[in-house]
Amino acid sequence: MGEIFVSMAGTPEGEVLALFLALMSALAHAIFAAVNKGGIDPYLNRGAINICYSIMAAPFALFVFPLPTQELIPLLGLSYLLHIGYEWFQAGAFSRGSFTLVYPIARGIGPVVTAFLALFVFSETLVFSQWLGLVLLSGAIFSLAFINLGETKLDSEAKRGLLISIMLAVAAGIFVALYTTVDAFGIRKATDPFTFLAWFFFLGGFGFPAIAYARWRKMEDKPEVQPLIARGIFGALIAFFSFGTLMLATRIGKVSEAAALRETSIIFATGIGVLFFHEKVDLKRMFAILLIAVGAIMIEFH
Image (cartoon, rainbow, N blue to C red; front, side):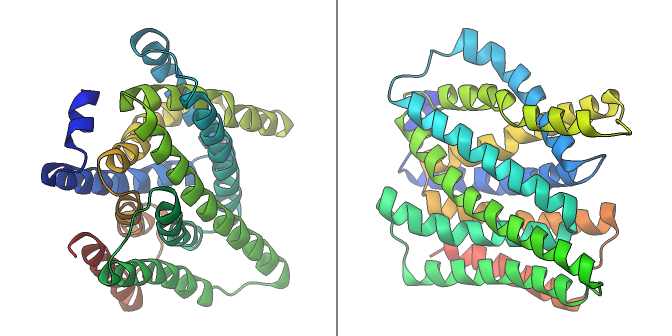
């Protein structure tokens, strides 16, 4: 299977597949973020998800695919640390801010930063119309956050908490760009891309779950474990599609394009916010969503 993906890199068919994978990742990530935001606590949700996908990936990492090469080990280690940082910032932002405020900020930063990193790391270049589409996409995503922020009336203490959530979301967005670049570099160095994926998901169970467990122990009213396990299993299955398809898209296509197209997840996330979190979508928000779609089209069809 891995050989098929590798052989399609740089081909017209590979470009079409990379587009499909990036859009699949966008939908899956919107669902994944909602699973992480909802429920008992974002920290506990994330810990449960990581444990579950680590257990699911363990047989493949330990018995199906080979051990990471010396070249892959430091890349997996760096990816491991970056994802812990991202998960911590994201959970902190979700625990303090609304879904339709925090999510657009975190996702709006990633594509632009990733495009610049891809320029230096992979020597990937975008034409003018793609850069314009990238700015349009990110700007429209940010506008959704500012629309929500402008309509929020809070006291001074709540505003302070909101400011912290925005800062955490910005940090999460920067870490998105960093881990996307490192993961793309790692999966391209692997002979079989699924070797990198198997070890990436397996190692994920040894980081954030410890943070989640420490938080759970400090809670006076500890939540039941069964609902967390159910959320963890569902979130893990979504994570394989969300992160796995993105990494495969960066293996066979341009990193900057895949990262930008993945952020169309905000379109799906807005629908989820309305349906499940009862958040509003008016004409201004619909216009911003339209601009996101236009920006994505400009990036892909240049």
